[in-house]
Image 1 (tube, rainbow, N blue to C red):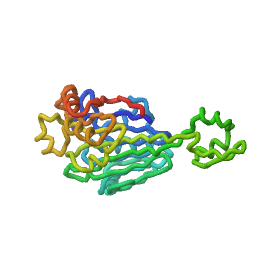
Image 2: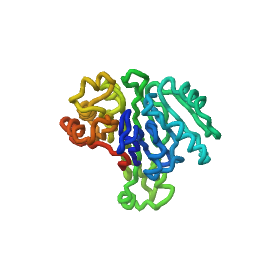
Image 3: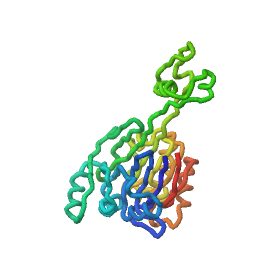
Length: 296
């Protein structure tokens, strides 16, 4: 899977940073976390086709997280987008989407499924599940968690020891079914192992709260806001945000493997102070830049 950071600023964009948007590419799925103003242009610069987007997960309805929606949907309609775009968000999302379509004139409409999310798992297939939990930001706000399912992998060296030919026998073993070969009963665990699925957390626009830990618990990658440094902790609390140091505390307590900071206040000309603030608590941390990519 690949994560592309399309926008890493907070409310006010800068010359270097667009408003918030993060794109997760996983197989045939393209999951967009938030859609700040200008996100469709960021897709083009990043070299990612908009039509790869299958799901949009909205954290909350402050403008810097959703102002890119009308333009993105309009462009998809002009590209003859053939899929059904699934849009998930907190309570009130359906009404706000209806108002958006009242405010703008769309010559062509694409197939949309708008769903409101409360708490827990809201999507699941054979490969992964998506879950959400409420955050604390003064309005309905969600944090999201992507969980890839564990996969049974075949160890081909062990397969050779049993002289198992390529074909349906290996397929059955991968499906966790025993097979008979050369008079021997071979169990799946004799030739296979379990590869843990990857976990990704997306947390932005919230004070540090209990559900932050629930979302971030044991993730391989924690994408978390760091609007201010700890020098401005009072301002951070006043506006319902986390500091970079608090993001580091969250990553440390949640046993996250890596922390990537986003959603920076435009007051910071560079992110060194924010990175150092988080690193004082959690070492494996970087500040994202627009168009930065991470492979998991």
